[in-house]
Length: 395
Image (cartoon, rainbow, N blue to C red; front, side):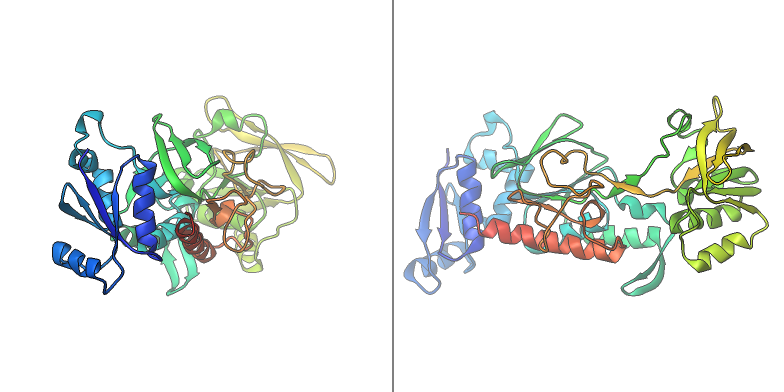
């Protein structure tokens, strides 16, 4: 193995990170104390052309600082420099792996990058559940902005830092105990990290009635923004009585022939939305009604509903149903290892810590109140800063 030399000094967090990085990989190195202004520091400056710490040399050739060392590993060049190419590339050890690509996860990524943390984002998509809406109101700097435009700005911001991303990947298992965490993706690969930030958001709550699972994608849908145009000039139903359901009805009013709204409770959404729905001649509302089943063989043909007041049942004929009855946290992978509340949200403290060292959570998957895009982005930044504090305090 080629010789490795690191110029470092006490109290330098990136010196600590560089030494830990090499120790964890079994890379032997010579450490030279180089306090700023000292003789060895001046020698280092003359040799490397830089006064910043750490400075790392492999085989007498300058590598640079910690981020340069991490970059060599990410590209597979580190083993080559060390003379170990026959053994293949070193498995990267990330400072932080962020699971989720919504506002919380992307904000965490930006703040991790600003702290020069070696970061990997693992997500099925970019944007997360905010992509289910058409526009966002009152995000700081924008009184109103289309969701696609806001996500594009998020992604453009993240791209400036050149962070590693696995988009389209699904996490199948997490091993959170110990100093090195493991993230197993659906391609069978294991990714290692010092810290994990869980920003997986939520998913739609299902009706859990006969016919629902069988007809998903054949008239049963959970996103009016995505699928409302599919019901142009058709009759369609919306399940739910809150703001999301009312907004779905309003989306459908623009394209559908008729919209049925079926809610277990009286309508609970904002009055301004209720007024738009209740005054539309296209809409028929059934409050305090239970959906018994979704009717259809190869496509949705109708609903069977029952009045909770009278017990009377009836069938409504339509070509589809959009389910808007709330969201459930995407916490299935950690419910046995992290503390969750009664609805499955990950319990965190004011620093986004989960109770397991080195594991943080942020955004809608956590129990933080007020599920808003701007809140999720703030929580993501906080989680990244907390991860940074955790890393630099490790010895």
